[in-house]
Image (cartoon, rainbow, N blue to C red; front, side, top):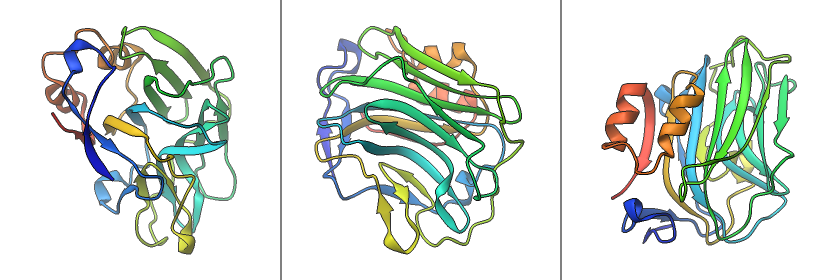
Length: 221
């Protein structure tokens, strides 16, 4: 894992620093601030050099089962969201089948979990600020996600998903770049999500995150 200079996004972001992934290293933490049980939003700006069948972009595992909790993934190049309240099954398994992500292209991808109400995915282009695709479900959305933590280290991960004693799995492939990422302890509105990809960006990305109540963020300039 290394810091690299971003290219191919847009003039406003030229020269920003990305985190370059090597196919095995991931970002992980057990920070209690990220053990969110209620409404929340995952968002990241990513560019993939290759596209394996299963990729975990941002995940928060629930106790005892590393593959259940809440996760933003790619399945055969399509954005997917998974939400499980108790670890026994996924109440929500949402896939945006209307668009297949391309390699070598920057995307802003979000997962919004609005407790008891909806789970939504969106894909924006940070090069144009335009919405590319979106999907939403209101069926079987759980009221909360268990916040019990006894699965060991790294229950929150960027670039993989916790796999219990086996460590991480479905890691982003070698050559992946993530320019920025954030987690909010609320369900961002469609307008809020669109603002994150607006051209030019809001005057202060960090300020925008703070105003919207982020629990965690990553960005280097």
